[in-house]
Length: 456
Length: 157
Image 1 (tube, helix red, strand yellow):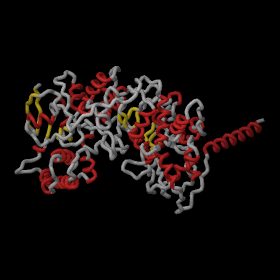
Image 2 (cartoon, one colour; image 1 turned 60 degrees about the horizontal axis):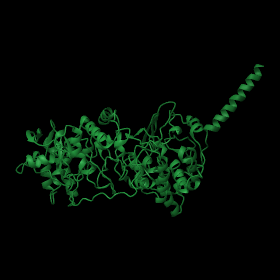
Image 3 (cartoon, rainbow over the protein chains, first blue to last red; image 1 turned 90 degrees about the vertical axis):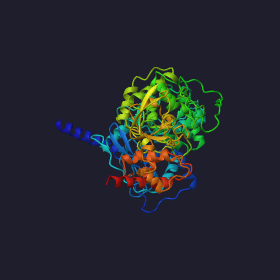
Image 4 (cartoon, each protein chain N blue to C red; image 1 turned 120 degrees about the vertical axis):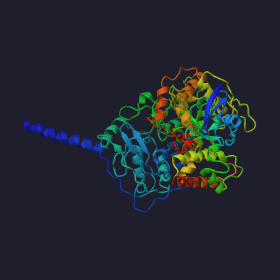
């Protein structure tokens, strides 16, 4: 009797062990021979470049001031810090010896060439939906970049998160491979947009809240609300706070240029996204916008104007004289009159003037964090045509920033005052909330690069 | 309203509306004409002065937020007879062409060097980024700032 039990137990252990190995173990894929870079068709490389722009691979895989795609960017997670890997074709430290099959497996299953499981900070839960053809083009693009020798720093993860085997469990729960089904009730363009947004574009990686396992909470798709790199993530579903409802045309223009006259300018990590999308194909960005705008179709913003009224043009260079308000009891209004109004009430459209605050998403959003960041750090000048704004960290103190926020909120939205402005300003000034600043062309500009942006 | 500003080490009582830009008060009331009106939008840097050690755009700064703070302009860096290290370095390198941007350049550079006199070329470039020169004397300006750092260190030695 006991013997039968023992046999059953041994069999059970073997079965469980085999299942566990099958779930966890992934074989290595043979490396390409050293020193023999594969050749690719130029049209394929160009197509891959456009797709890499949709995926914005460069943002996470290029360190500030580092070589493009050489990785090493610290990605903070609730479990510790993960460093992005080098995806240049360097043979020693990059993916130079990865075959196309190894690249495709990484995209679809989150497994490195040597068989180790990748952390989902690399959003393979989205990339798994990318077609094999698109993976081929991306591979062609990446394998023809300049190889850069740069070893990825070791992740800083505590036990048990440093044991990659646990990712097998994560994959069972949260990885849903396979193509995204067509929705026949929607246009081909919308379906293309969904394929791009849910796959390579991985919009939800930031715009959807995450659960305790670090996976997206599908029940709150696109509900926003988290804070990434010190920037509040806007909801891009029906809870969008945009005073003017986004439509596909204005969203496509925003995604390509980084600003929209009826909404504002991309800042923070979104500036990286719009900078990358500027390099994507127009058709794909329009499709992306069509899909994402449809998510916000029941939001509360008013309908966009049929044709944008052309604002009265100012003449000459020096019409920036502030509209003096005389003595105001409201310190926020006093600061607004001098520091803000010369650009923001000039009537000049973006990017030459500031957004009309009645239309600004930052001012009407549930959190004042992005408005705080803009007031303190501004939007540094980039190397391309785009909006800029000076920061005021050098001259406004905590109470003064809170006063301006209060005035903007009260005067330009019909919404209640932000209850957390006081604390969020304090945390931003103290550095408790670390804010990464980017220029409109998506390049990280450290606060402190210019004195203007140095924290007190 | 009446407001007291500490400019170049001296308390000065002035009459001004609270939202008057600091630049207007410096030039019109205090006759400190180094800082220039360029764009009025915080985009060119010609109006840059130092407040509590930080370079700021005086055209966008209402005087109401400046009480109790220490404001410094180029006039504080030295005199015609006895130029300070920053001014000396700009003269040595003939870094001005039309000169309109130079006061702003010097003040932003001064704020940088006071914190870090050994600033590298990259740090100098990054710090001066908000200031524009339309004559194109950037290379001389960069050399001058580097030289000013050396002069400041010699002065301390």
